Length: 534
Ligand code: HEM
Image (cartoon, rainbow, N blue to C red):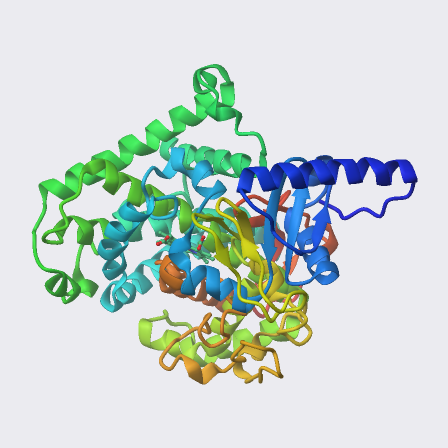
């Protein structure tokens, strides 16, 4: 949506009428007033002009850290303030659910953690979080490495073929390649299934992409026509979606059946002490099935796996894609990264211990997540009325939030907020090493890397919620460390072997967004072996 300046009286009047009607409707729908909150207004047609989060940023600068976005009869409260985000995500987390997001994802993920109702979520989170323990993550580093090497081998082969024709570079859509890589990793890490999508196509892979595509379509399509009775049978894309879901569900059901048939029931502590590095199957599914007392019906288990498949796939692929986009525009930073890789890994493979030494690569990954958070917005709906903390620009007393209010926490705005970051739009991985005082920002504890001792990657704690790439509070991402290490390994292995350039200009890379930010036509790059001049 673009906040348009009204040029004629007629337009002004029309806008006022629409706005008054929309305010009235919103208040009726949400059962109360949002008080003196600034209002950004937009026309529904503007929704399709450019990704929503760009406009939300412009309005943030214009209207402040908490404002109401009204279009038609619908209104959202947009939050771009760390103290308010901390309140909603952590301090009063159970006053909110996933609202619109749950409506969209429930048909795909069922009662998986992301859209789950509170009771189911509490029960399943307790079971799933311990599965991401330290030894599991250590074992995953081997899977990240094996899968990344498979991708690199593919690139090397393509390059060799090219060299037969005297070429020294290959051109590839790295976004598509990273998507395949992330799919292979999530399949092996979560349910010990090798999609092998880097080298082949299969009906299951097609179904996964079909499902992701539909999830994205639903998150950008504002009228949930798929809820209309019979739509799933009549609308061709809905029929295809049902077929895709069936293909994936059948595959997951088979894996669950197999895991249950080979079940070795034991306690969580014993599971966490298994010899993970030598296990044939170190997957989460194995853990979840073997865990004593965690008896769960197959349907719930399938919803959990599906959720992790979707949540952990495109997100990581997007991090790698934007990392290359940013590094290609900053050759000195690419060189600095490669120098670190050479000194830490040489020509060898990463291990859990070596990851600790790849500090610059880890900072690149988090800086990419700062500039391109996935997803750019977190969505909530108030289950009860609430009062937001005051003190931010705009309202000292804090706004009242009526029951049913829909909220966007704009992670994009927070991560690029001029109030909390110096040179907010610049790619500077080094910024995470520098302490930043709160400088009189009421209620914000400042940015202090020492606040989270032992953490390999900067997180929402050190930044007091000014940086929240994985959310925060009880519903924070369970796969955060998995994803961060995966991205670090994949990036390190790619840069160990190749120099990368964008094929076209950075401006020609068009950004589109659904659940994640991705490109419209791929991230086309030129790759050449390191050291080879063009
Ligand atoms: C939740 C981001 C990778 C599984 C979340 C949330 C964010 C996020 C922001 C919180 C959503 C909210 O509060 O509304 C990311 C990013 C990733 C990533 C940026 C990659 C770079 C993964 C991976 C997995 C995963 C690899 C699983 C293997 C989940 C699950 C939840 C979640 C299950 C829901 C947690 C809950 O509600 O208890 N993720 N994620 N994510 N993520 Fe991730």
